[in-house]
Length: 101
Length: 203
Length: 308
Picture (cartoon, rainbow over the protein chains, first blue to last red):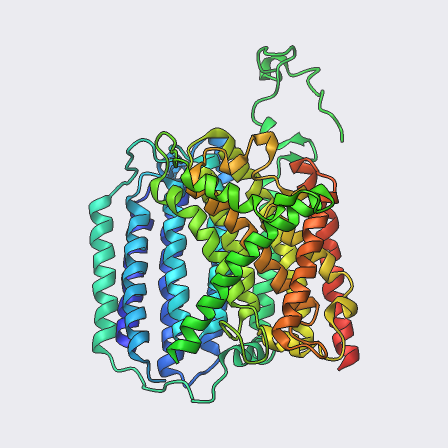
């Protein structure tokens, strides 16, 4: 368990999350990709805090903030999914293509 | 901090588990299963945080993510097709691009991790992570913490407004298509018969 | 190091799981009949356990195999983890984590997931209804539990259970925070879906999440529920009744007596409290008990400031 291995693990989680966020058609699965990316970000923040920050508490604080961001992302995401589903009976990203116009 | 052999082994197992469950999220048929795979990935990362002596963050991760993924699974079952995964299913688009982008992200970030020089400044020996986090949250960084709290409150209000069914003028999802004049009849209030249509209930 | 950090806590937790679950079965039977006139009251739980062990473990059509197999064991593991957190004396603690109080809270959250999986994985409608009911209940009592536990941590200025006990040397929290223990007991009934809060495995769903269970897995599920009740009693005794503190007797004996008192109180409440319909239960949690837990937290903060 060194800083390098921890960061490689974080990179792997971010990569998988990015794949999910780009490839999934369903809104909720897309959000799960984003959450997986944030998982990697939190791990990287804690790793830097533990190995190269001399224990500066801001490293932990960053993780707390990311947790709050995840909660906000999920709550707003679900509210939008509910609103879209009520309006269009749709839960897939392609169904919203007319937003482009 | 010099990790012991047991810590190294535990980290190896947990890291493999986190990546494996994270990958399984996107290749399982059932969406409920996917959300609980994500929970397992979070739990593995939380356990790694405990190994890094960030005891509060790791445990808080278990707590937060258990509730969050539970809610996610509920939404899966409510809205999505095939929640139980009884039929094989693959709902992806632009998959090749996504795989390439994901691999590039991994390679670039790993290269940064391997090639760059990070300062070697480990935790001091008498460091107490939980207490220092608490002092930071309610001391120097209180503004950040409070801002996060206010943003969460705003989100709660916004979410209730967005998802509330009942507005001032009745049910929110009645708005686009008015009910028929008799049960099961044609939607009333079409432009041709504009008059006499203001039969809304006033709450 | 391996002996006292790994093996001893492990043995202690599992011993409590086994004995405690047996004790729950006996006590519940005693409370139900009102007296010990039935001579077989000590043997009946063993007999029914042995009978379940000889039965075949049935399965449903297309269950979610891993969750279906693992859910009872996972619930039992959560109960054992909870018991490992309990401090028996200032030195005899299974896992002395700096955030053991938060870890107990996250065990409650994970229990919701496990119970949902138990019902969902069966792929049967009554079990699924039980699972949904439990999630509605679980998400409601989790917040109450958090606020009550934060109130306990405030005077200790620590999230460590040993320090929570040490902060009660002058006055137990059951006295200084009068709302805390009653609210926490309701959380305990919810966590183990016992008595009036048995919405998940209730008889109106002919067994709820466990309706499709038979044989040894059913035994494990019942054992896990009882063990979780024991773990909860020990945590409640630690957080509110001063844990190992007490005159004359050694610390572990006091903790045993206090946990037993909480356990009997829970079983008695489970027999005596009226049952609610699930939706009224959720309303009760959010509209009555959650504001009461806010009041408890404010009270706890004010008392902590005043006593400090």
